[in-house]
Image (cartoon, rainbow, N blue to C red; front, top):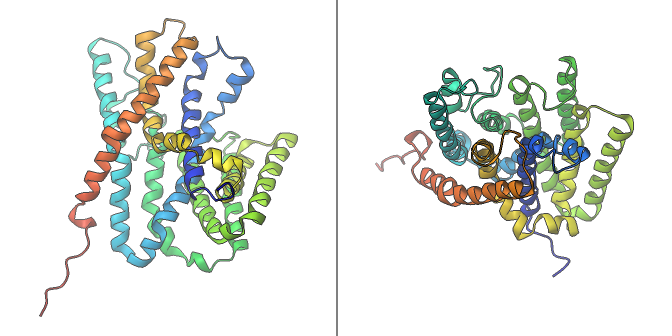
Length: 366
């Protein structure tokens, strides 16, 4: 039926897949200058902003899936939540990091530069704390910096759930909190002389993540309240998003001052929407890309390094055939990792939680 609403999270899953490929193209853009015009290269150079979209989406999805469980189950459920998030993110991260270790060992054995793979920092990457302000630059698998900051958000999430009766806060208060988070993030960047959300990721990335994650929590709360009023609220959210973008364009505002707010209002419009855009974003093809997007995101950086070594000459430029080959490689590897490693490992770990994450043993009958 044409007027039926798409499944409520399909559109957000689809846009996550598009965002992941935005990051892929961002990382390879400088190898495309021979086939793409400069304005397109410049547009691809903003692909790092997709990570801020990920943070808001993550806060939304985590709140949607786990907030009620934590509110009912208390600290035991919080322990299980943390194990489930570990099972979700670490196996693939560990596998890709292991592949990087093998690659670095081969570089070392052949007398090549290994400065991008500092052995002293490897334990931080294994523990997923490498981007908690403990290092000066990105190393090893660069995209994993955001997984490190998300892991910090997961650790804080139970505290955030228990910190307030979020359901009792009015929508105006929630909107004000989201605005304060966006303004605070902009102020933090401005006070440190930075006008790009992609600046100094090693020091600023954690704050980008935490602000975006909590904004995503608030977004989910608003969506839950307003989804029955989607005919009224979705157009209003879309209008607000367009107004923010138009104002930023007209006034030449720094991205730190408007991108998070634009993402928040745009995602609200998409989550509530039932029109053509929501149906396109929630289509089976884009939903599938969203489902395998974590594998796409974590694997593409190493794949491009290896692809350049194998197939790209000293110019480091990709032609159309080379670009198609690389994109096909990433897509195939993403699907293979998702079905062959990511999901099986997650299921196995969820079936075998450690003792500290299990339900307490019932008291013996007297």
